[in-house]
Image (cartoon, rainbow, N blue to C red; front, side, top):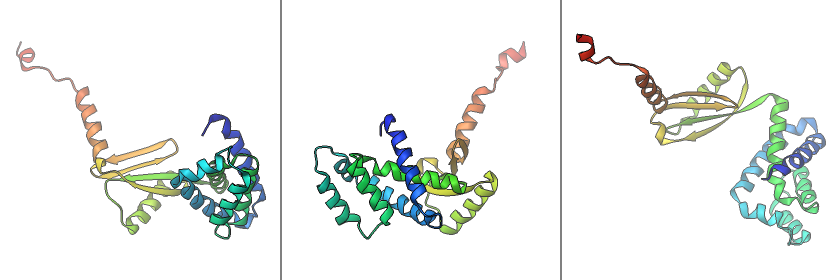
Length: 190
């Protein structure tokens, strides 16, 4: 996404936020989040919607065929409007920005937990509660795995990072050991 597209994303996301009924903000945000994932998993759809050489009616037909009745009407209308304005390729970005705006409004922050292995649901719940308590913020968590961590947990939210992984401890230990000056036994004997 180009830098010049950011104000456009903001404008459409803000319009969507204003158009949504307050009691439906969470449901619409959940639908936008799910739809955003679908669009991210199918980059050819984004390219198709953003292709200026293709007819608008062909894009409308595809959108209706694939999404009508499966997504909220407001999100469908947004997609059609973006296509009409030759900005169909920005649909995913607008949805992402809308979700972020709703989260900001609700005081919810994105958090990411990375572990070496997949966590069981009860452990995820306890970790989630502990991290919310520690940060003092309501968190929407994303869980990832990275076998290179060996063990432990890496947590990120905004500009905060907590590294309690074995890899992190080893890196810290390596740095500390490099800071220690060891006198040689020859110098001590003189």
